[in-house]
Length: 459
Image (cartoon, rainbow, N blue to C red; front, top):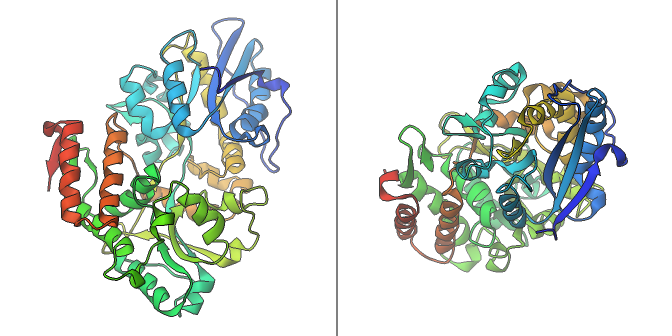
C-alpha cells in the first residue's frame, strides 16, 4: 500500500512552478477551527520533475494558505499507473485513517465510488457557488452527477476528433482543410489515400482488447454516439445492448480492419492494432514519421510532440490538421466528441468537508483552473477559461474548446467498466472475422448478465 505513496507535506515548502501570463488568485476559506489540515491525494506518473498536479498545487496553495491563517494544504502523491491508482484510492477511501480530504477521481469512476459510499454529495455546497452553475459546461456538470447527486468538480477535460496529415492529403489530391460530414466521407478519404499514396496507413481507429478504454471510448463510442442509439438511455434507465447504431459502429470497425482482401486493409496491421502499445506507436512514430494519414484520437496528442514530450516534433503544427468527427449521416448536431477527464471529490470520511470544499472552490477559480489546464494540456471545463490569454494562446485550444459543447461522456455507473470490456471484445471479434451481428448478439448476452435483464433493452 505504501509502495506508491509519497507524502510530500505542506506544498508551500516545495519550489513553485509558474506559467507565464497566469496569476494565482486565492479565496477565503471559512474555518471552524484555528488549525485545519486538508489533505489532497492525486496520481502522478514517471519522473518527479514532470509531476503536473503537484506543480499546480505548489503554485496555488501558498496563496490559499496565506489568506487563511491556520489552514494547511498537504499533498499525497500516488505514483502509479491508472489501474493501480484506482486500486490504491479504493483502499485509501475505505478508512478514515487513510482517506484524504480531497481526492482526484477519474470521472467515469464517480458512480462506482459514490455507490460504495466513498464520496460526499456536493449539492448543498455547489448551490452556494454561482460560478459552478454559470461557468461549468452542462456536460461537465452531468459527468460527475450520479442518481441526482453531484460528487465532484471537473478540473479539466479532453475531447476527441480526427487528426490528419495535410502532406499526405495533398499527395492524394484531397483538401488540406478537410472536414468530413459523414462516416462515408471518412472511409472515402481513407480509400483514396490507399489508392494514391503508397507506404502509408490510411486510418487508425483504436480497437480491440489490448487498447482497453481507448478502444471503447475514442474508438467505438465516438462512432456509436454519432448514431441515434446511445449506449445508455437515461430516460428509461437502461443499457441498450443491441441497436442499429451499435451494428453500424461495428460495421465501421469491419470496414477499417477486416477487408475483403489483405491489400485493401485500411487500418494498422494486427501487430500494431492489437498491441497495448498502439497509442505510443501511433503518436510517437507513425504520425511524426508521416506513415499514418488519419487518426481518430484526442486533444492531448500535441503534448507528446512538445519540446518536453515523449516525441518532440516541432513541425506538427504545419503538418497536422484537425477535423470534427461527423455524425453517421451528418444528422444534427452534425458532429460528435467524447469527453473524459478528472475531477476532485471530497471523501465521505473527511473530518473537515466544509473546509475541503472551500479549498476546492478556491483552487478552481477562473485563473487557477486556467493555470492547471495550460500546465497539463487539458481542455477547460469553465467557459470563462477561454478568455484567459495564456489558455487561448495554446495551439489548438480554441478549436478543442469548441468541441465541448456537443461532447458526450461515458455512462458512469458501477457496471460500466465491465460493459466497456465487452465492447472491446466485440470490436476485436469483428477485427478478426466475426460477423458484426454475431458480435453484437454476444455483447447483448454479456450485458444482460452484467447489468441484469431488467436493466437492458434492445432496439
